[in-house]
Length: 134
Length: 134
Image (cartoon, rainbow over all chains, first blue to last red; front, side, top):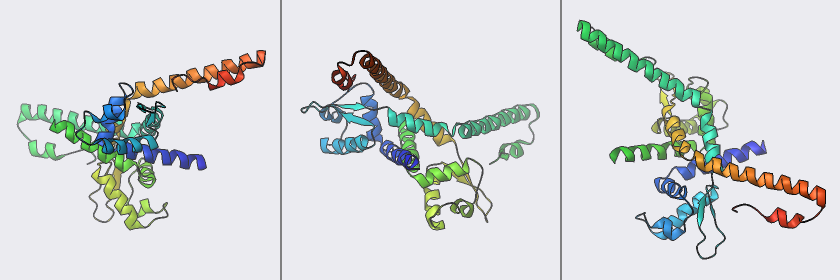
């Protein structure tokens, strides 16, 4: 139970940290290699303290780690929380593949109805408004 | 550019919605089938208005949709945002697999050093403190 709570808390922190475009951009930059705060701040139109705040959120979520070099304290990306978040989402794969299948069925219906319309020029409105399960 | 912004905004909303244990539990329940607010509130030790607030967050993120039945307004899970979040995380697979490979290498090192120690009873401290890339 305590283990489950810890996993849930970590997912909270990971998803909250990922819910920000600047933090996702920082991770994208770090995916190419380590970088100092100054290097990370450069491409963004925000202050270094603002970047530091984002880094703190990422560090608390375990998504980055800071190096020991006292001068640069380089940041590096840590993959583990991303793997855990991905594993959680993977549990819903059947759901979204099911939805995609529904969408495929809808598109097939529309294509068939279009072919039918091209052949007969009839029943257009009725066929277009019929949507499976919506 | 506008398209990229929309994708980024949707990821913000999805990750923020997923950063809560009750909302994740609601999605887990809805993965088994549609449910009304009353049915969703039952297993939770929180009020129906509190559940309704969570549902609003999920609905705004496109993670659930509400049925037309005026009485029950049943909720159903929508897979698309989960698929998009999963696709985003997938972009980092190499990172986390790289990290796991580092962890594998570390465990191998430790196992080898343990075997070495069992054979020789020497160099224990030196081997244990050596960690690749940390």
